[in-house]
Image 1 (cartoon, rainbow, N blue to C red):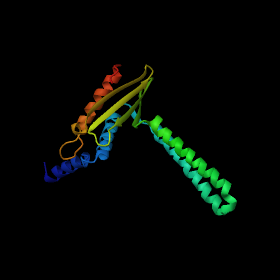
Image 2 (image 1 turned 180 degrees about the vertical axis):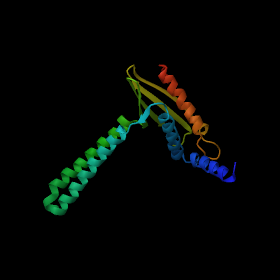
Image 3 (image 1 turned 60 degrees about the horizontal axis):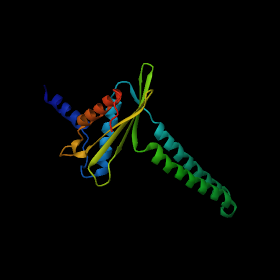
Image 4 (image 1 turned 30 degrees about the vertical axis):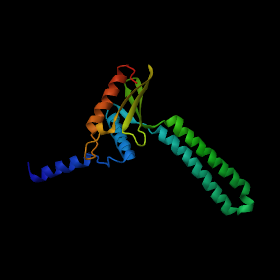
Amino acid sequence: MSSKTKKDDKSSKETDEVKINKWDGSAVKHAIDDAVKNALLDRPNCTESFALVDGRLLICGLAVAIALVALGWDHLHPFPESRSVLIACVGSYFVLMGILTLYTTFKEKGIFAVAYQKEGTVSKTWQASSEMKKYDDQYTLTLTLKDSKGVRAASITKSCASYIDSNGVVLENLIANEVGRLYNSLNSGKKDK
């Protein structure tokens, strides 16, 4: 093998590795979430769904449109004349921000990946959500399956150190193994919590 080929192999391995600051809890959680998402989407016939994100973007887009209406109306009809329109727009904006808060709290619930899986006539929806408290090392991954049999969930809680080495490199193969274990347990029909 030539030195150039060895160098190319080394650089491709370096680009595949995700290295993070292992002391930054938020970065650790997001890096593990990304690895879980990749492992879930690597499953056969899985395609990513953006419906949850699209819902959030729709609410935010409406809020921005209302703010632009207020800005444009105030430009065309200076303040004393535009008072009632501004009040209506500001009120609508705050209502939409309340709806956005409710949407992210009760609909998204920490879900960071949604995948659809089609196997013949059977359709399955997979959702991955996680939780890691601010100053805690415990990472909780919950995988939920929705299909014709109902809704099943499986979760695992481990230290984030199980998924990151001492240099801050995310161990994607270990994360993929955990996702595979949860995936297989849900496919077999077991409930695991």
